[in-house]
Image (cartoon, rainbow, N blue to C red; front, side):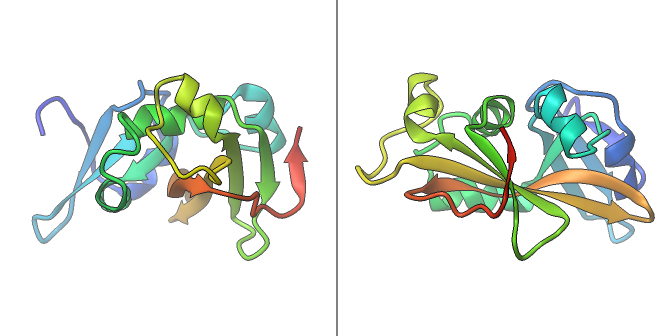
Length: 162
């Protein structure tokens, strides 16, 4: 991919300065496989401080991105921008009961629709939720989106923000 930033190790993702939403980083594996990561921005500073996040970016791996787009091809006109919007404007942020290294973000579906970042959904869809995981590679953590989807109820654990 032309214009992508190249890194040598996955652990470098957590050390990069903030990049624009949609920026692509490529990692070449020893077998020649190229893994791509897409920046989806970061959450607002008060939430990042609360969660002890010091990383400049949250990342969406190409494999998760492809899965999300394949499952809902017309739902998100711009997937990276939709995730970035949720990170900046969450309704709430929660612990994730089954994963101490992940957090659950949720936004009202109507808010994403008004922003032009969510297509038509079922009537009972009230929210769009995301799971952001703090992944540690060789003691260098980075943040990555592992889930982003419409939802009819809040599935988060203990509320951390607001």
